[in-house]
Length: 281
Image (cartoon, rainbow, N blue to C red; front, side, top):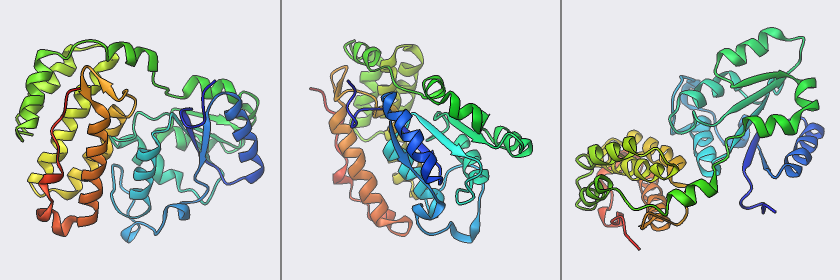
């Protein structure tokens, strides 16, 4: 039986209290756990100047949305198109154009008589848009069809394989603080590997890019990259191909916390002693 702490997460952007209970019951029956964002106000103050451009943000409600979803790493997002407290017209295109979230499937439902609204949700990037009646009658099958759940067994098997020579060289460059130079070896190692273990290389590569952005004084670029890379590292076991993934995740969290506390105005004060080498165990 899947425990609640390890069950795949579905995030519901739903404000109908009666219907959230129904969705939650179906999700639990299917082995999922539900988290809810019932209103944009749940995420804090509005974005500065009310700007809603596609892509990532690190401030205001949209910035908090990315931070929240990055922390949760959900398997599926479900939007109620009739929930007026949720600005899905702005959020869906942002989620689908951000490298941190674009792989998360989006399932929407709405009134069958509002064809224009349903068409708009599909145009903005939703993976599936259904009439509420269809969503209600086939909810569990829809969750199973669209939820993006990592294959833990395949990942575990792939992580028993040896580290490639290219990846090892890239990690050596990373540990020497050559964050720009390590990119090519790690990316080529990722390209040559077709297994589920390739995520390890992408995670270390993007950690290097984040640190390179800190070196360049690019606060937003570093924060965005730190948010992006969790999708690669979070599904991995604590040790993969001899690499201490748990330690790397812990160090990334410390880097993100320190950088966020400094803010863009004080990025030059970042304490590089926080950054640890990628370790082997």
